Length: 86
Image 1 (cartoon, rainbow, N blue to C red):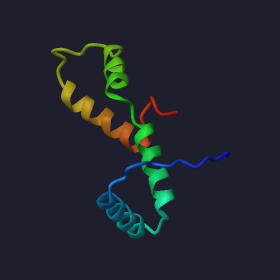
Image 2: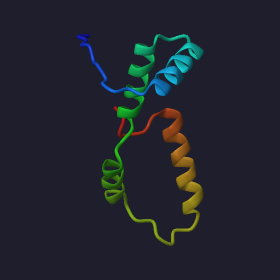
Image 3: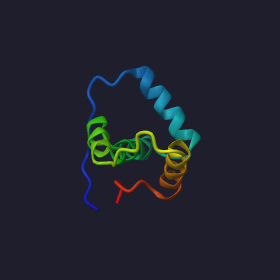
Image 4: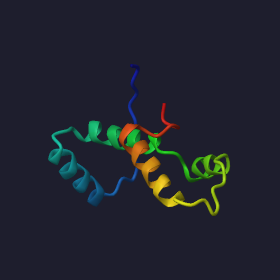
């Protein structure tokens, strides 16, 4: 995988201290920890992407047992990966 150097200007000292401490807690370098954070964030849909996905879901207004079914579906997505994450 190709890699590049990324520089962040005006990064607050207080955040650097906290970042270093958090990276040490999980036995990562600060660079690896930041990459992990960025990947995790970018793997999540934006609010607009999430809302667009909701618009394409069938309406279930007034369906009996809907809440329990949605909870089960959400748990399944959480355990096995959300369908929008390939």
